[in-house]
Length: 161
Image (cartoon, rainbow, N blue to C red):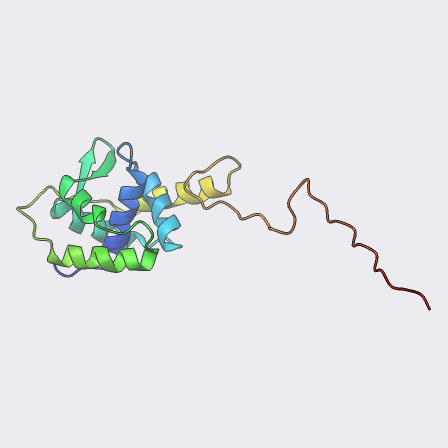
């Protein structure tokens, strides 16, 4: 598969994250992309990446949901667990560059309107109250833990002269 774009790698990682237990819908994949990359690529770049990866047989459609093929799972399995996102992107990009497709698969095509609607649905879900498991958890301040109070300082043992 030549050339390999950054959007391809991020989309592959997001699909792996979103479709861990079951095939993921488009909105879930976009939410995972936002979590991994920090921003969502444009509709055109996402549509091209879906088309390239599905034509190579790395992303498969299961009804209205999407999952990784066994070849893509092999590519994703070789990364270190403690590696940060940039190291994983570089590692997966190298593996994708060396990947050779064993034939043509059915390409998944999306219109800009479909991707735009999925991005809009994700953005409204982020702003809505409730629990979203794909968003990073806010970090609590270490100094202000509830239920703990600071001790009073001990008096100094100075002699008065």
